[in-house]
Amino acid sequence: MQSQPAGASHISWRVCAGLVALAVLLVPAFVIAPRPLAASISGGGFDDRGELVDSFSESFVAYWRSGERNFSPDLERIADYWSHYHVVKAVIAALLLIVFIALGVLLWKAFLQAGGLGAGSRAALASAGAVVTALALFALAAVMANVQGATAPFSSLLPMLPIHASHGELADTLHQVGQGLADYPDGTGDRTPPALEAMVGDFARYHAVIAVAGTVVAVVLAGMCVASWRRSARTGVSDGRTRRVFRSFGPGPWNR
Image (cartoon, rainbow, N blue to C red):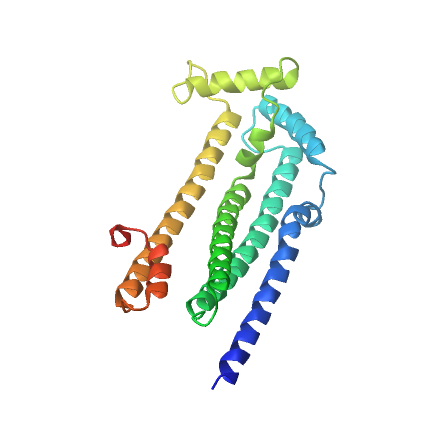
């Protein structure tokens, strides 16, 4: 009667080890892979962040002075690269999220079935499950942030501008942009610069994306809380470990 559970446990731990190894590979890939992959997809990239900032600053000044709403070819190239950069990061973060969710499920299941283990082993399983759950939340936040950056790359690039520049073409341009934003949308009698309208529209999309994503995540998490509460309510009083686990995922008045 003991051989089957032992075999199942052995397979579960092998799966856990595989998931941990996959996470170990994906974490550095999240940092290293986006730049070369984005450069390959978009047909050109940048050696480092400094080169990207310099190129974007020059293109931004030229774009503002052009009086056009549409991006210049140089600015379009930079925005395209930055969008692909965030797409790659979003994909890797999504894979990490899947790995952490799967690993968390296995660890919490192992904790619930750890009746024959000592207190130290049960505490280790619970701690590992809590850490992996936290990592899953970080991965979810990374997915949301990078979807936002991929959808509105221009707005995502703007914080890179050296806004503390005290002189030069960039400083003059930023001053003009600031004045335009202070008067927007009423203006001062002159026509609103097309570039300013494009920036405001892109920022609106930038914030709309995170608002929609946040709403979806909130609804999903609320559903998980309700499901956890119901599962906890159906669990017998004698199975205190299971009740505590499901209550931890369903915070509310039933946790008091």
